[in-house]
Length: 252
Image (cartoon, rainbow, N blue to C red):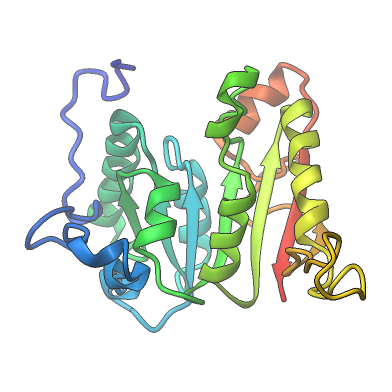
C-alpha cells in the first residue's frame, strides 16, 4: 500500500536508517538464537555518535513527529524509532535526515524498519533502555486479531527485561476497549513479586508476574499546549473529540 507520503519526492533514509543484513548495523539473526536468545543481541548504543548517552525506544514511530520534537529537545538522549510500515519508516527517516543536513541536529535519532516485538525479543540486550514509548498503537479491535496487539504478557515481560532498573514503559491510547485490555494486563504485572498463597505445591501457589509500579501518565516534554504526547495521531484524534488513556509502568 502506498500512502504517497513523499508527494513525488524520493525518500532517503541514509545516515538515519539502521542498515539490516550482512555487514550492516543489524546483522542476520544467528542460527543458534532459539537455543540461546542472547546470541542475537546487538549493541544498539553503538548505532549512535554518542553511545554512552541514555537510550529511549519508540515503538510505532509513524511519521516521526515525536522523535523530531523530543530528539531536538533532549540532544543528550539517544532515540531509536521502530516503524514496521515501510513508507512511514522512510518518511520519518528522510524527515530526520533533512534536519541533520540542514541544521546539524538530531544526530541522536535513528530509525529501524522492522517488527518491534520480534526486535525486542531477539535483538535487544538486557537493561539497555531508559524508556520505551508506545503511543496510539493499532488496537486490533476484532476479537480474532487480539493476539496481534502489542500489549500482552510476553511484550510486558520483554519490556521489563530490556528496561534498566527504574526505567519506564510509557503508553497512551485513544481506544477504550484496548485500554480495558491493557488494564487487565497492568493489574497482573504491577503486583509485587511474591507468592499469592503459602501452600507449596498447591495449584494456587504461583508467583505473580509483577515487576512494575504503575504511575499516572505525565505529558511529554515536547508536547504542545493541551497535548499529551504531540504525535500526528493524537492531533487527528483530538480533532475528532476522542478521549485519551495513558499510564507509566516503572520497572522495579
